[in-house]
Amino acid sequence: MGQSVRLLRPAPRRRQQSSQPGDKVLAYTDVYGGTYRVLKQVFDAYGLVSVFTDNVSPKAFESLIDDQTKIVWLESPTNPLLRCLDITAIADITHKVGALLAVDNTFATPALQLPIDLGADYVVHSTSKYIGGHSDVTGGAVVAKNDALFERILFLQNVFGGVPGPLDCILFSVASRR
Ligand SMILES: Cc1ncc(COP(=O)(O)O)c(C=O)c1O
Image (cartoon, rainbow, N blue to C red; front, side, top):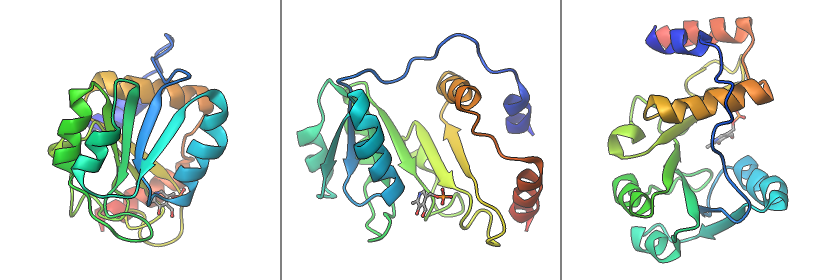
C-alpha cells in the first residue's frame, strides 16, 4: 500500500541527476540482450561508456571500476547462462568509488533473493515472467533502496511515460496474491 501511494504522488519537477557523457557503466557480460543493446546501441551514442567483464569474480569488477564508474549492473542469476554473482562483495566494491549497484532480479524473484538486503541500490524485475506468472501481461518494476533514489526513477518515469495500464495493474495484482 505504501508503495502504491508513492506511485500516485506527482512526479518531482526538478531535473533529477542522471548520467553525463564520460560516465561509465560496468556490467557482467552475460546480461539480457535488451540491456546490452540499450547500453551499446543507444546510450553509447550519448557518451555513456559501457565496460563488460566476463569474469564473475568480485576482483575482476574491482580491477575495472574507477571514479568514472557511476553504475554497476548485474543480473544474478544471469540470462541466459544462469551464472550467480556475489552481490554483497560487488556492492562493497561499487560503493567504495561512490557508484550505485543495480541488480536485475528477474530470474531469482523476490521469493528467493532480496538484492537490497545484500547491498544493491536498485533492483529491477521483468514482471512479465515469474512475477506475472501467467504469460498474460508484460511489464517491469524498479525498486529503490531509499526515497532519494526512488525520486530519480519517478522523474524519469514521468518524462518517458513508462507506466502500466489499468488492466496490466489488475493482472499483476491478482498474480501477486496467488
Ligand atoms: C533478465 C531479464 N531482464 C529483463 C528482461 C526484459 O523483460 P521484458 O520482456 O518484460 O521487457 C528479460 C527478458 O527476457 C530478462 O530475461
